[in-house]
Image 1 (tube, rainbow, N blue to C red):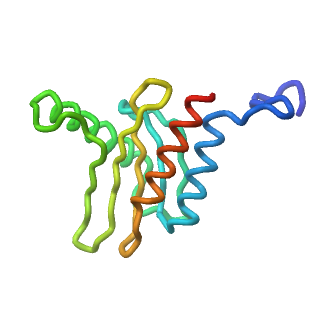
Image 2 (image 1 turned 45 degrees about the vertical axis):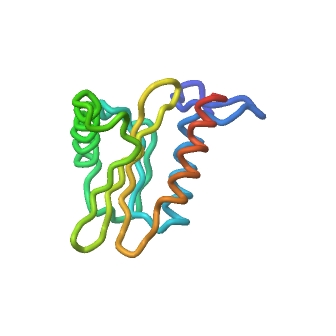
Image 3 (image 1 turned 180 degrees about the vertical axis):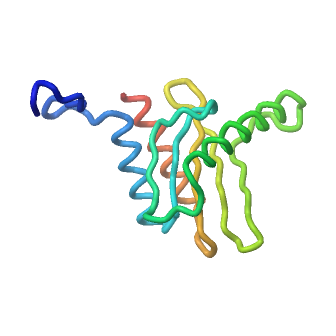
Length: 141
């Protein structure tokens, strides 16, 4: 690495950064689950980590807009007493493709894991494992 590089470098043997662990985990989630894309955002739409297949069916900008809108809706539902807290919201198309919004707490802050799931694919078990792993990584980061 030259002295002008802006790339982050970690000392040998250091724990990987949360973002690197999360992006590697999301990549595995896509590979194993056959998902189109996986994103991790703050409720305000700030990216924390993401990865997508070669041809995701929606743009990342659309996903950011959804995250902001769905996060606001979840907060309103809680304020109105409709639910105590929101764990997950699922949008399923008539063609059975899914957009999953899983609400997490990372670094004592809210975060939203978004998955684009094609028809005929299951997501819940892999998503549960990934959410637990991310919460663990955030604890040790």
